[in-house]
Image (tube, rainbow, N blue to C red):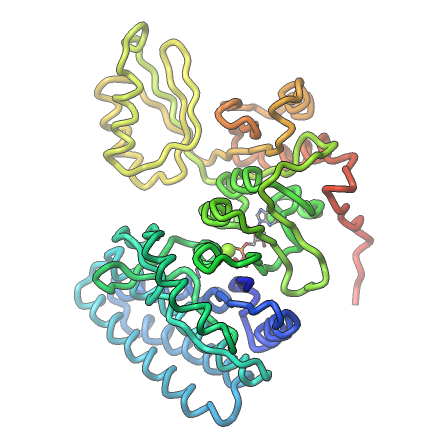
Length: 467
Ligand code: ADP
Ligand code: ASP
Ligand code: MG
C-alpha cells in the first residue's frame, strides 16, 4: 500500500480533481490510500465565516456560507456521476445546514473557542474527501470514503491536537487495509477526534501529518505528498523563485527545513515516517512526471554543503538583559518559565554574560510575557524579523560555513546567530526587510555549482513571453 496526499491546490477545482483521479488510477496496482486537504482556500474561508459570526455580521456570514456551498456544488457536479447527484445534493445540504446552525450558535454566544474553531474548520476536509470519493467513482476508480475522525484519535488540544499514536495505529491497521482490498480508501486530512468523539484538528497544514500517521499505521511502503511545486526546492519560492529541485534528502534535513518554515511539509510530518522508516516523496500534481524529492533515512553524500535555505517570517526578537544574571544560577529557568506559563514556544536562543536573546513565532501574548520578564530584567522586543536557516548534513564537518555566509552578506545586519544546537543547520536572524536579498546572496553563494546526484538545476528563466 502507498499513501497519496493531495493538498488544497491539488483538489481546488473539478479540473484539479480530475487530474488527481488520473494520478491515482495510474498507481492503482500499489493499492493507494488517498488523503485530501480541503478544496483550495476553504479552510481560510471557514475561519473567516467564524470571525464574521462572532462580530455579529449575520448578512456577511450567511453570504459567505452561501458562496462556499455554491463553490463546492459547482465543482463537484462536474465530477460526480449523474446517478450520484441526488446523494451529492443531499449530503451538501446536510453539511451546510449543520454548519449554518453551528455558526448561528456562535453568533449568539459571540465567542470563538478552540473547540468551535475545530468544529467549523473540519467541514473543509469532510466535504473534499466525500466529493473526491464520488469523483473517483465517476472516473472509474472503485473508491470508499473513510471518516478520519473514526481512526485518528487525538488529545484535547483543539487547533493543535497531537495524535494518540498507539490507539490510532491500532484503529488504522484494523480498518484501512481491509477497506483497501478492493477500493481506493479516501480520507480527509487535518481532522481527528478526541476520546469523547469531539472533532479536533492537527494544526494548519496538518493534512501532511495525517498522511504520515496513516502511512505509519498501515505500514505503507511509501508516503507521497502531492502539491503545487516540483519538490523540496533549494529556496522558498515565495521569497526567491527559481530554486533548484532537491532530488534526495534525509529525514533529518527535511525535518529541520520544515521546522524552520519550508511550508511544503507540516513540521510533524516526518516523525511517524522516520519511526517506521517509510520513505516520503514530494511530488507535483500538475507535473506528475517530475520525479520530485525523495526523503529517506540515510544521509546522502553530496558535494554541496547546503541542501536548502528555509525562512520563517514574522518573527519577534527579544533581548533580555540583567546584571543580576552575572554569576547567578537559575536565571534561564526563570526566563523560560515565563514563556512556558504563556504557552509560547521559543525558537532560537543565544546567551551572553548578562543577556539572553531569543525569538518567538507567536507574539500574541508578547505584552504579558514582557511584563513578567520586566519584573527581573530589562526587555526590548523587535517585530518583523526573520530567521534564515541553512540546512545540510555537511554543515557539521565543513569548516568555514559562517565565513562564507557573512562574506556573502556584506551590508546586511545579522541580529542573532545559532549554530551547533543541531549539527546540520546554521541559522540567523535578519530584519524581514532584508530577507529577500539575504536569501538571494546565500543562494548564489551555495548553489552556484550543483552536485548532479542530489540536485536538478532549475531551467534558466527565459525572456518573458507576451501573448
Ligand atoms: P499544499 O496545499 O499542497 O499542502 P502548501 O502551500 O502547504 O501546499 O505547501 C506548498 C508550498 O510550500 C509551495 O507552493 C511553496 O510556496 C512553499 N514552500 C516553502 N518552502 C519551500 C521549499 N523549500 N521547497 C518547496 N516549496 C516550498
Ligand atoms: N486544510 C488545512 C489547512 O488549510 C490542512 C491542510 O491543508 O493541510 O490548514
Ligand atoms: Mg500544506
